[in-house]
Every structure is written in C-alpha cells, then in structure tokens.
Image 1 (cartoon, one colour):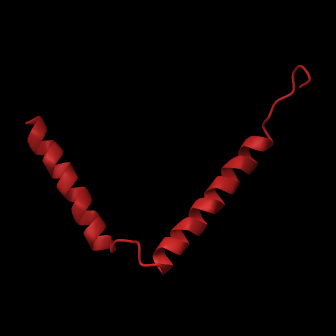
Image 2 (cartoon, helix red, strand yellow):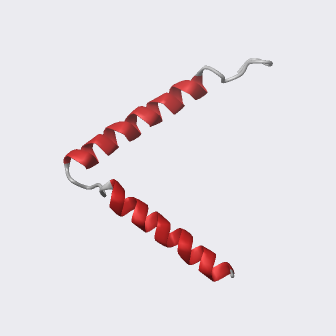
Image 3 (tube, rainbow, N blue to C red):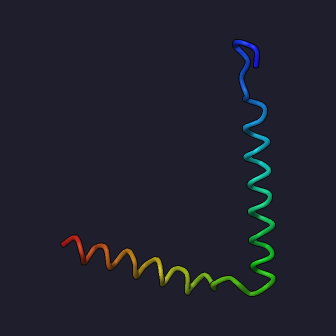
Length: 57
C-alpha cells in the first residue's frame, strides 16, 4: 500500500454488503416464521428493564 493511501472506499462497501446480507437473513426469518410479534418482543424488553430496575434498587 502506498504511503498516504487510505482504505476509505472499501469500508462503506463492506458495511453495505453486511447490511444487505443481514436484511436478506431477516426477510428469510420472517418468511419462515422465526420472528416474534412486536407485542411479545416489547413484553420481553419491558420485563428485562423492570428486572434491572428492581435489581438496582
């Protein structure tokens, strides 16, 4: 690599590729039924938050 050369162009491409792959995986998960309904996911998150609040008091 030449002095002063940066790898700036590669980072966004790698990031975009990973984002696209992740989106495709999540679409496949949704199609296969491997997702939680929003209400169930929020209930789990709320339970974790409440447990932490209780633990720290």
